[in-house]
Image (tube, rainbow, N blue to C red; front, side, top):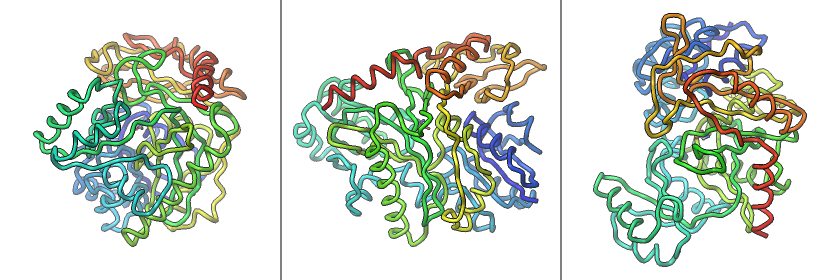
Length: 436
Ligand code: GLY
């Protein structure tokens, strides 16, 4: 019998828990959560609401339940050292210790690591702890710059020239704002191309790569509107993306491998968990935009829903550093995931309204996120509410299924109709051709 704890309670964690539940192993699954997610509580032996960033609470609970493996879903518990506390208590963790999680929690750490270990894919950059030299570096980059707050900011710390910042004056004022609030930052060259996510299972020594996925961060159709946690994602049946060449995937995989090796060299212990590279294919090859130290959300729904291997066995192999001897297979299916989000999301989402999913026949394609059951009704509680995933031989087929079913999710919600459509994919292909 294996007892597994999942920390976090969004759609990503619902996807992880569904996948664990499909394991043939004898198991009990527990969840420490921020909300009473009904998709998760239906599967788990227990869902308990706690402060998921509090290492002591999580350690005590894990000891009490005799947990063998813990999987950390979101980034904040990693930043708070939850993995360190659990390892100290003898519990194997999928999710890096605080030092190694800097790959996500510190932009300057990541850029410096790439520079120090000569890992390809690193744009020109400079780190700042005050305003000295900022103007000169901006002048050097001209109109192609990005300012990144050097810490976790839920996706809101990155400001890109042309999108969020329209002049050097605006950039300087954002940098001053960061310094005044005690923050450091990185300025780097803006990269032009098509983005993709390439996640790898890592046992500290060996990596097994997952299919490439493309996320859509903007709230509205045609990639417009404010940035969000991710409105939807797609992947192709060959585990690549229509606008990528084989060499792009190979470059991204190599960067992940070199980064894991560099982390092990730097800290004397390996990175155990999910290494999620946010890449961009440009006219000069693949570059790294950022790293995350966990499964992507929504990307987890794409990859885990086509995982044909036992997720518990994979977790055990990560903990015992045995990924090289573990067969990990993903089905050759295309996937399209779309999120239904509350009206007003992300800036001013409405809350507390009822959602009706009764018309969706196949409930297995639903992934619950920011929702709870109240008086036997499903109610949205303010962030991305429900993700719907379609599968098919082609992205077109998968998109049709996702779109047909998300329209059956009733409530004051909206979603992006364009994600995974032939039109949007053609635009991305045209964009890549225009860069050549
Ligand atoms: N898909 C974006 C993220 O998980 O951070």
